[in-house]
Length: 194
Image 1 (cartoon, rainbow, N blue to C red):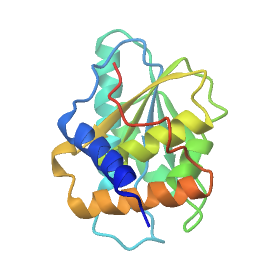
Image 2 (image 1 turned 180 degrees about the vertical axis):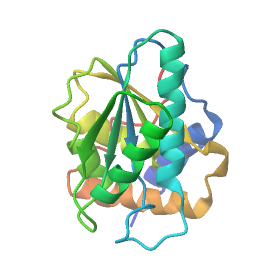
Image 3 (image 1 turned 135 degrees about the horizontal axis):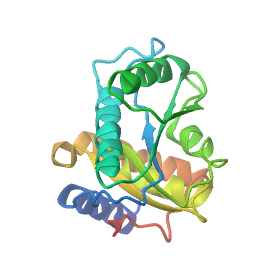
């Protein structure tokens, strides 16, 4: 059973996400990591378009960095079918620097495996793109698994569309993954980056 204090703490984090804003695009962002969602993989039957939405945001950030005379790379992080689509779409949209990080096939694919797959990347500053309701969990994974030597910022999509069902599902996932030792509950409350 989830304690009332912990439930409130986690609910408060989602309030911060919903009321917050994405950071400014800066020229020193070296990589934009697009974490795929559920869509575009034939192993998952969904009506979502989350991977496409995240890719569109990643490309928008990539182009914004270029306008500021930065030289970013777009990192696509999904399963094989998702990466094939995302790479083709990125090239169609004139993104000339793309890196693929292969995520395992479903059902082994997860946000955790996506973040773990980024450990070998060596960038000083990255932007991570995902949907807003994943923000608190992605932040915890990023802090735990690979980003101690890398400055990172989260670009969260659809902050104004978070619903209670998504929040409750995410809270349950955070608790479950914390109980396995995958993420930390104590010191990683969600705060907006600079």
